[in-house]
Structure formats: structure tokens, C-alpha cells
Length: 577
Image 1 (tube, rainbow, N blue to C red):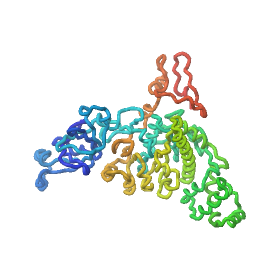
Image 2: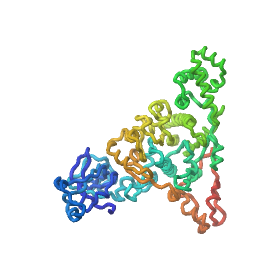
Image 3: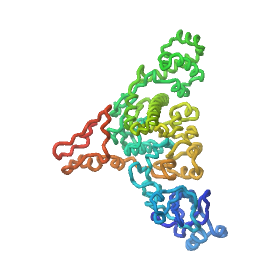
Image 4: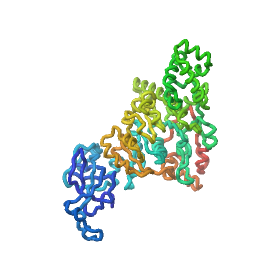
């Protein structure tokens, strides 16, 4: 079937229940898919619609009582389209005024549906021009994330709207969540709409990682965006073993760990509730030095403290013992912290940081470090926002920041969401210019209030009914989208809906391969020429995008000088590892 071809006519429907489209005799019902896009041409508007169901119908029920035999092909063909026909259930999603019917360009912007087309309005397959009008043409701030399942048309995400709010990437294990997340991060970095802090629990984002295809390795963000992405690590030995050129090490100081950080770990530490209450008495006496003071207490000193302040000896002793065994013993926990201020400065300058955990892949170190750093960053951004709101000076406007976390339900379950900085960020959305990109395979474990605040949700295949139900928390018409979600393949397909797209759409995820690398490469074809040694005289190796500002002094970058004569220097010579 050709794109833009006629499908049939509208025969019934309503604004709340959707429309019914009777397929023409020459249109095969087997070509129809749930999630397919249809354009209905009304008298004044074009209606951009989504197929929600496909049905077989008959003009006369008596035909079904005595169906033709399998070998009666002529009779079957005679009945098709007249007595028997296909019926599409479509849901109008957007109204598009016709260009010839309006006088101002602003009126051409797609509008929410407030009416329906008339009887016998014609339905067509949505064309590439329709998609471009709805999802936007190629432009700064718009990034292609894939194509509809049955069309070769790019679906472009509005990245500026995407980073305005917290967002989620969901899907069961093995559906490609990490590659989809990396694709989104590539778009945000390329179009410079926000700084990124990525908590890389499994070392998948910063440097190259294995794919499930035999022998193929996918490039990391630092390899694709040299000079813009910086890798910090909690495990320098692991980074050196894997050949990862990291930019700094991170150490967490004992005084940087609060009792709230420990309370978040009560399941991993198996703490009794009274242990945290007893720890609060230590905080009252010693403030930020509560942890080193508690660890320094021997048995006699601990009993004396409990007698003076009314603490439970057994509870406080158990707290001290578990902190000594599971927190203070972590290789990256030290008397004094290091590296966090450097990370914050890079983020303030619009640069991007990947924090690798190396061999520290247990949930306890991941949750501890992520919560500490996020709390520090959020406090800084609150101060910046308050100064900006007071001065109204655009030069003081905080740098938009997006924080990517995996295993998000650990930070955002109903209990933790009320205590952690992550819950605060998710609820406040863009108020302080900090948002989240939560990546999880169990969305049902996330607090429903937090889920309802996520601006855009991108979901790969899910099987658990509770997870599917959670995805559509706070989504109007979610029941009609469930069937679309359950029809996804287990790989390279996803459903996106929310703030950054005009309407829900199932799509084939853009491949994370050499074609993507070439599209992201600022040197483009000139780099290939330089590597081949065939660059013409005077060929420029300047980036296609504007250069980074020169006012960043804390972390100077290597300056590239033009070679003598017309010799084009190789890319690796300009940017050595």
C-alpha cells in the first residue's frame, strides 16, 4: 500500500469513543495494525488519528450464518467489500487546519481534538508530509529517535520539551533500555539542550560496551563527543583494566554522608527502625561529624554515650557495626572527599559527566553515592535558581541539568520518594532546572505520584500486568494504549507518549550503529577524507556546529592549530587519546 493511499470512509463514532472507518473493498484488513496512523480529511480540518482496534464486520449477519467454503474463491471475492468488510477503530489525536483554509502560519500548528469529521469523510494512510507537520521537520532541538513500525519516516523528539520535565525509560530486561537511553543522551548532547550526569552502574554509557550481537561493540558517549563528555570513576583499577581513559577519581568523605543517606539503605543494611532513631542522637551531638565520631567509639565510649543521651545500646551498637562493615569499608569512602566539586563545576559549564562504579555494582554503593551527589547538586541548583529569580539576569540562569539513574524504583518507591532528593526532583519538575531520566524494568515499584509527574515515557516490552498498569498512571486514555504496548516485539520497538511528542506512537528504535556515529560526528565526511589521506587542498576540518565558548578556564582543553601548508592532519592526530 502506498503512503497516503485511501483506506475507506468514516461511518460512525463520537469524540469520546473514537471513530469507525469502513475499509474500501480493495483494502486488505491484514495490512492494518494497531498503532498505525491515519489521516481523515474533514470539511475544514485534517484529523491525525491512531488505529486502536481492527474488526471484521458484515452488512448482513445471515451471510456469516452460511459462510462460503474455502474453495469458493469467486463467492468470497464477491462478498468482500459489499457484504463483509473490515472496520477500523481510530482515535483522533490532533486537528490540523488546511493550509489553503487559513491565513496565518500559526494556525497551521496541530491543535487538540475538540470535534470530529462528518459522516463519509475519507480516511488515508498518513504520509511523510503529515508526519513532518505533526512531529516537526529537521531543525535544532529535534532529534530522530526512530521510525513508525510500518513506515520509513523519522519520528523527531522535541528535546527542549523533553528536558523540561523528568522522564522515564522502561522495559523488561533484554529489550534494549540502555541503548535507547544512550540514544536519547546522544541527542541531548549533540543539540546542547542540557548538561547530563549519568550514574553508570554497569559501565555502559561512558566508554564502549558489548552488544548482544557477536563481536560488535557500541561506542560510548566519550568516544562520540570528545571534549564534551568526561568520565569519573569510583574504581580506577577497573577503569585501567578495561582501558577506559577516565578524567578523575571520586572519593566520598565520611562527613558527606548524612543519616538520611543511611536510612535509604535500611533494606540493604537490614537495619532495625530504632537504629536510625539512635543515630539521630549522634547527629544532634556531633553534626556533620556524626559518622566518624560514631565509628571512633569503642564499647565503653558507646555505652557512656547511650547513658548520657538515652540511646538504645543494642541499636546504636548494631548501627555502628554495620556502618563499619558495609559503608566505611568501601574503597571509595575516605576521611576526606575528593572529585565532587570538580564534577559540579563541569555540569555548571554545560559539560557532561559519566560516573562509573566499576566493580562496585551492588545496590548499596550505587544508592549511597547517587543519593549523596544528587543531594549536593540539587542544593547548588536551588541556590543558583534563587539568585537568578532575584536578579532576573539571564547570565545567571542555571544550566539545565538532567540526571540519569538506573534501578530507579530503589530511589523512588513510595517510602523512599518522600525522603530522597530524587523524589523531590521528580515532583518539582523544572522548578529548579534539574530533571531526572529514570531507567527501570519495574515501573510498578515507583511511587504513583512520581510516575504521574513524568513528562515523557518511553516504554519497551513489558509483561507484568502491574508494570503495564503503572506505565499509564495519570495518562488520559491509557486503557486504549495498553493493547499497543502489549503488541510490541521484545527488541528494537518502543512506545513513546507524553510532553515531548504531540501524540503516542509505536516506533522502531533508531539503530545505534555506524550510521548514527556518522550523523553525530561533527567532522563528517571531512574526517573520512583525512583518514583516507585524500583531503583536497584547503579542506576544512572545522566542526559543523559552533565551537564551545572560550570562557571555560577551570578545565582547559587542548587547542587545535591549523597545520602548515595545505596538509590535512588526521583526526586522531588532532585529538589523541
